[in-house]
Amino acid sequence: MSTAQRYEEAKAIYKKLGVNTDAALKELKNIAISMHCWQGDDVSGFENAGSLTGGIQATGNYMGKARTPDELMADIDKAMSLIPGTHRVNLHANYAIFEDGKKVDRDKLEPKHFKRWVEFAKKRNLGLDFNPTMFSHPKADGLTLSHEDPAIRAFWVRHTKACIKIAEYFAKELKTHSALNIWIPDGFKDVPSDRMAPRARLKASLDEVFKMKYNKKSVIVTVESKLFGIGAESCTVGSHEFYMNYAAKNNVLCLLDNGHFHPTESVADKISSMLLFADKVALHVSRPVRWDSDHVVRFDDETRSIAEEIIKNGSDRVILALDYFDASINRVAAWVLGMRNMQKALLAALLLPRATLAKLQNKRQFTEMLMLQEEMKTYPLSDVWAMFCAKSKVPSTEAWFDQIKAYEAEVLAKRV
Image (cartoon, rainbow, N blue to C red; front, side, top):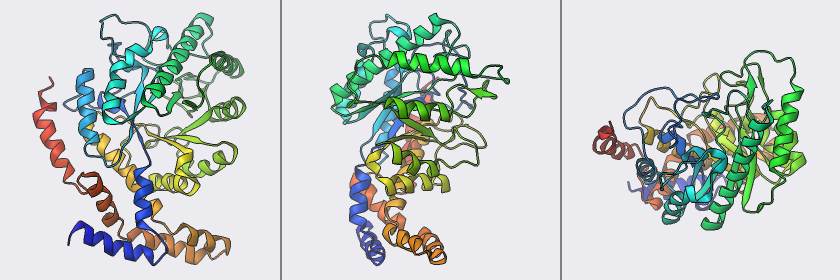
């Protein structure tokens, strides 16, 4: 049976529950996911700064790690060719490209250092998002924007301001918004004697950053919390409570990373509450395994729950990005897996009879609601997914991995 025939059968099955599969495919096509560049080279960047520090750790040594801008861009191209839809690329500041050979420190970064990324994005109709890089640097010795030394705090303030200007450049050149996410590794390995002072310094640093003028319509600033990190197990300065309150008071967005909370907390549960008090919320979808270990996103219950909340509350209200880095498997395949799984989760959410389920909840018909939620799990999602992939001219099944194996043999294996 052809893809079209299977789709028509699935369409009729979903229609009986009031679900319009054509509308679902149309909405899914318009949901852009920001794909994180750092999966391609284990967060190394192009500074040659040495080993990772600041709570960042990539494990594994699979062949074919990207070592240059050209290699990383080629790998992104290969991944995007196997992912349906049109998406975005998320960059960190340490991916600056110094084409003239004159490297500058992070507080001196300028738009010109990302010109090649803009050219890359323009040719492929991709948006670019951005992140200050406040780790793996001599001035990131446990504290950055909350550092005791005013000179070090000032350095990171200048870096953040420079990054906002670069995001503004992205937005202007690519004629789409650029999300600028601020995450810092600041924290304490053991129980601190004073939690207030470093948080007060962080607040003051952020206040200094946001004195600058920038286009707030084109640059969407987000702040990302964390429960704990390597070397910051006892106290994280930028906690969820800190950033949630700072965002609300200063008209920036909270970013929720589902690896940055206690294992028993659900980020999916937080989304609706956040959207009651803000126009938008930002997400980094990852997969923690007992902690923020940044495994490749699976098509699992948590990812599906997050996707359901995105769809229920309006996909246009969510700034969606992925964030993981696994060096133990083929890095290009890791991109493709995570992106496709996130899209499958979104499609599964789009194919739910949301009005019917909501009505059952309101009538407290919880048995029937539970039954329908479970039965929907075996509806012909794969046939609708196959049509979505066909429209984008990418494989719908594991056939895409044949191209990854060929790319590994022809390109990645030769990187020694």
